[in-house]
Length: 250
Image 1 (cartoon, one colour):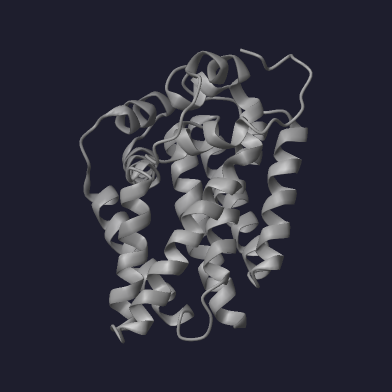
Image 2 (image 1 turned 90 degrees about the vertical axis):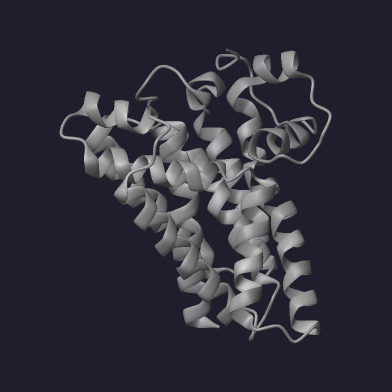
């Protein structure tokens, strides 16, 4: 890994991050990306920028067609899940099954690694999708642009979780990427905060940060670190709390 190299952001980090966190077809030098390792993580929030602009377009079209706002909210959630390969939703389900279904650190990690989904995962996904769709539906009745800031911040906060917590398993996607430096995390949060403020979603900064802290504390207590599933859960819960905060002050 290049974790000990001199760190500086590069433009090529952006398509690398898009290729990692979505199924958008971008040209990425895989060898370079592997060598680049965790330094590309500063661009995670910019993936949210792309997805947020896409979601805002769907919201605008839905309102123009006079669709029910809950239907539009579901379209937003479904479209982002489709474009991202539902990787964050999968992480949320695995995290809920493992963290609450296991009795020891080893057992929790084994459950999280299992491809099957349990009761906690099913209930968590149903509740998450329902709440996100309802809140997006409520938000677009007032304003659309904050969707972008919410998508950005919910992905930016994954980076400090990666930087602060060690990898709990030693394998998997999170382990392959590596552990970002604090400078990478600060840049990710700084860019995310600027975009959140610019799009009128300044409350998402607080909401997403609180969610990330809570998930990180639980992960540290239950499995002594983070995994790709924990990061997926971080994104999903941060998106929900960001929505709650933004809707509450809109």
